[in-house]
Length: 248
Image 1: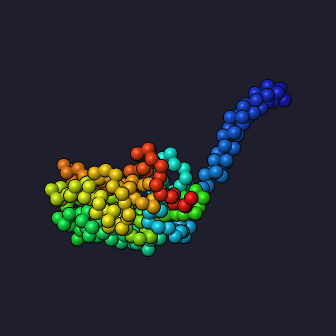
Image 2: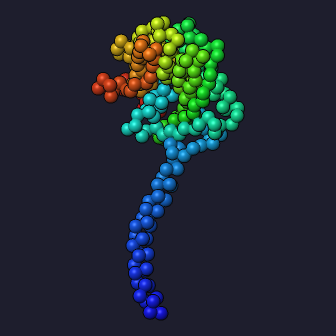
Image 3: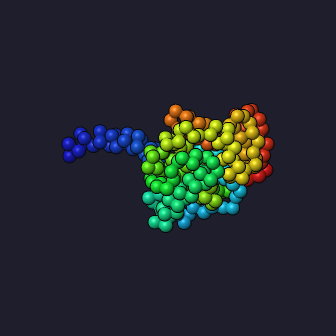
């Protein structure tokens, strides 16, 4: 009894202190868990990734806003191809091959790049959803290589199968690369986008909330990159000349 009296109060005090330290943390974690059940943090089943009807410029705007760390107007979730059903993974590999075919057809890839033996290496699927849930887009991030040690990376719009962002190192065709301006022009033409040229290799996409694409060429390494670089308002200090993805 004396021992219980001797140790009881310190134990009780320690339990109260421990609860004071841990309980708020657990409550906070529970709140975070409930808050973070939003689509941008929880993996989704393939059947949940529903693509709503949008135009390509609208989907490109969603992509552009999603990759801006400061923009919370678009939620996103990613899913490794390994988690998709077998048919989904097969479609991703087909999309990679088809996307590379488009790039060759548009003149983005020089004829000297051998696409007869593409080695698909995998990737992931990303879904972007406007915060109000009005619009969504699904993109495939895919990578591969050729027998000539060309490294190929591209983002494919899953609805159309069109490549909308590329970053490739073409070691086999370093001497055959067109200029950055020609690359970007061919890219936008291949996507059938209405554009306004804003610089030597910079184009603003109409109907995409002022989204701007740029192209670059590094002849020493053979690297070519055509990517969404931001929005006209941020880059040039101008108001968007077109409506956002949901319209005004």
